Amino acid sequence: MYNTLGPVLCFVFFIIIVKGAIIKKVSVDIGKNITIQCPLHKSKDIMWEREGRTADQNIMMNLLNNGSLFLQEVDKNDSAVYSCGRENDVTDIRARVNLTVRTPPSPLIVSIKPSTIIALILWEVNGTGGYPIINFTAQYRLAYNNSSWIPISPNHITPNSRQVEVFNLTPNTTYEFRIWATNQLGKSPVVNVFGTTKKQYPEQELARHLLEGADKFDTRWWAVAVGIVMGTLVLLGIGTCTLLYQECRVTTVEEEQEIIELVPNIILNPGFEGTSRNEPDENSNNEIPMRLNNNTTHNHADRRNNAKACNTF
Ligand SMILES: *[C@@H]1O[C@H](CO)[C@@H](O)[C@H](O)[C@H]1NC(C)=O
Ligand SMILES: *[C@@H]1O[C@H](CO)[C@@H](O)[C@H](O)[C@H]1NC(C)=O
Ligand SMILES: *[C@@H]1O[C@H](CO)[C@@H](O)[C@H](O)[C@H]1NC(C)=O
Ligand SMILES: *[C@@H]1O[C@H](CO)[C@@H](O)[C@H](O)[C@H]1NC(C)=O
Ligand SMILES: *[C@@H]1O[C@H](CO)[C@@H](O)[C@H](O)[C@H]1NC(C)=O
Ligand SMILES: *[C@@H]1O[C@H](CO)[C@@H](O)[C@H](O)[C@H]1NC(C)=O
Ligand SMILES: *[C@@H]1O[C@H](CO)[C@@H](O)[C@H](O)[C@H]1NC(C)=O
Ligand SMILES: *[C@@H]1O[C@H](CO)[C@@H](O)[C@H](O)[C@H]1NC(C)=O
Ligand SMILES: *[C@@H]1O[C@H](CO)[C@@H](O)[C@H](O)[C@H]1NC(C)=O
Image 1 (cartoon, rainbow, N blue to C red):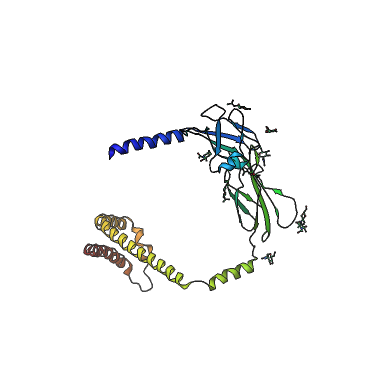
Image 2 (image 1 turned 90 degrees about the vertical axis):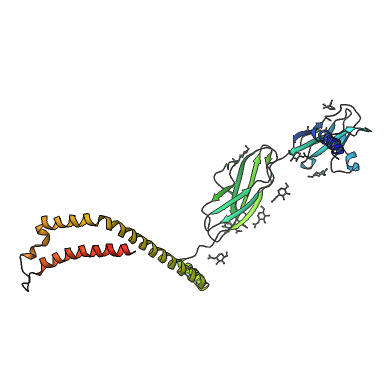
């Protein structure tokens, strides 16, 4: 099986090489004359045909005495693959020439995105024509009004641009925009597009517009919003608990130190206990120092209790 496959594959490759390798690329600018020489032979008895055409159409082709193909003032539709071979050649080995006619760029694919006072012109290039694009030109004017075209700055839109903004438009107004690309052979066909700027609502109307939206407001969104808020609260609660728990653990360690620091503060700061100690209050009760003392001891006890509570966590 492999013995037969090998030669077959070789033969297929041979045909691909013979038919595919000899394909010559030729480019010509639109409107020019071109003489194409058959790459295979230089004899007179050369037959040319254009691929994808019937024999009758091929007879119309203009052959020179020396076997070259002559195309006069080529048009875009002359772009094709032409093949040539010796007349009555049994081997039928042919050479192919891929002729490309260079043209001005193809029409751009344009869309307009108007807002109230600004419009965005967007475009795509659908074929440069064979030469790089030099620039784009865009203009606008009021629609349905024979006013003159207003250039859109920048006047020279660079070849890499694919959009340009038009400023200072009037809201709720229809404009006509036109744009074309230029390469070294000339301008592409001009594309005209209409666009209407959006209405600018006075404040009253704007409010009414917003309320209109409220009527159609879907209550399910409320449920979703409430759900989100509740979820956030629960998360916050969990976070706070975690933080408290961690703080508890820290205070049990630092507790002893803090108690020691508190006591000297009270001892070294007689003023801390206030002037009111020396001035008995209305009831002549000398309760304040007691209470202070109680408070400090109470604090210690509280902290211990806290620590105990934490330890039970
Ligand atoms: C193309 O060839 C035709 C006929 O041979 C001639 O009249 C014409 O001037 C040529 N055009 C150009 C651009 O060379
Ligand atoms: C064939 O003749 C044309 C003019 O008649 C000439 O331009 C061209 O170079 C010639 N081609 C060859 C292969 O001699
Ligand atoms: C090519 O297009 C032009 C018009 O653009 C037409 O006059 C001419 O007949 C076409 N040629 C062929 C071979 O189709
Ligand atoms: C001929 O050349 C053009 C442009 O380079 C290319 O797009 C096209 O695929 C080529 N055709 C063939 C059959 O090679
Ligand atoms: C792009 O150009 C090709 C041929 O040049 C054409 O058939 C096609 O419709 C164009 N595409 C658009 C979106 O205009
Ligand atoms: C065209 O526009 C000008 C100025 O904006 C305006 O005075 C004129 O009436 C318009 N003409 C038409 C036919 O709409
Ligand atoms: C615009 O001007 C052209 C001639 O310049 C005329 O034929 C056409 O009727 C005018 N259109 C309007 C709407 O004035
Ligand atoms: C675009 O380039 C062409 C060719 O260089 C030039 O004639 C034309 O004035 C340029 N257009 C703009 C708007 O700059
Ligand atoms: C927009 O323009 C249309 C007709 O040009 C007019 O009937 C409408 O009242 C305008 N709307 C606003 C909000 O200006």
